[in-house]
Amino acid sequence: MTNEGDYAFMARALRLAERGLYTTDPNPRVGCLLVRNGAVIGEGWHQRAGGPHAERAALAAAGEASRGATAYVTLEPCCHHGRTPPCTEALMAAEVARVVAAMQDPNPLVAGKGLQALRAGGVAVEVGVLEDQAWALNPGFVKRMSQGLPFVRCKLAASLDGRTAMASGESKWISSEAARRDVHRLRARSSAILTGIGTVLADDPSLTVRLPTTKLPGMDPDEPVGQPLRVVADSRLRFPITARMLSLPGRTLIACGDADPAHRARLEAAGAGVHTFAGSEDRIDLASLLRHLADEGVNEVLVEAGPTLAGAFLAAGLADEIILYLAPHLMGDGARGLFHLPGLERIRDRIGLVVTDVRMVGPDLRVRARPVGG
Image 1: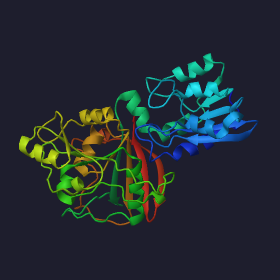
Image 2 (image 1 turned 120 degrees about the horizontal axis):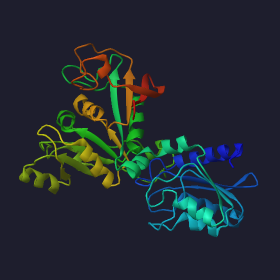
Image 3 (image 1 turned 180 degrees about the horizontal axis):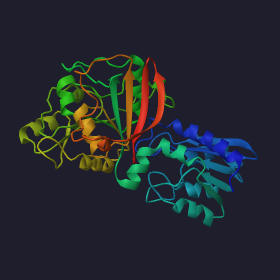
């Protein structure tokens, strides 16, 4: 039976899990706290894929004091052999008396089996303490495991009148330096950054994380920042061999339709991955692309694209969250809009949003919203 103290200790475990925000991919971010007689005796978090899980790190910190303790874990302990042994076995071997899990693991290899194993081993089990907060730490892992798709965020910067570029295409810089730093933190937590070929041809972007590790909590200052997979939707394979991102750290995947074999070979020789997807002449099947990324272990996708591709994600129901930076200026009705959404003619056709967070980032307003039903 849960009690008031369970919530306070689980909140601490969630703070521990946050330390892995930028490093655990494709694994979930998990924290664990061991408590005995009301005192914390050990804590740990999953730091990187292949490394010790949070439970084993906490048990190592607590040592013999673990016997009779309560373990607070932000995700159901695993019960299968992967790159590390099952955490359920470690908890039972340490004679932990009780396990409180924030949520069940959506991984089909676990999915309640870890909790069953603990109960069968005589461990008292509670589940569901601060479940929503635990889910919010791992939306991509949960969606990939339960639906075979990554969690998709669409990031856009606009003027207060909703314009993303002047009619000429000029857009640097709409938002402030503080907002751009915030975007780099979003990039750092993402498995992949996705843009369209139009953006590549117009801006030759890097799509890299350009923040030092000292600005990314939980990271070792001496550890290099991991670069998300760069993905370019390019139905006709117009990607230039001279594109900047091909010379930068990290991988680039070009998602195309029918491709010129010679140009494809040149891009692959330059280090790009090229994958063919079904679709029309002007666009690829975005759902197929997302399923492919999920199969590759991609949890969270950050879409940084123009109004056409951003609108396609939204219209197809593939955008889980919109993050909009609104800068305090006006660009006029001749400038370019946020989303290209043809076919919205009546009020009833509009796409509803639920605003989940609004805050100032420097001089800009950052709005987080999810599509209704998302």
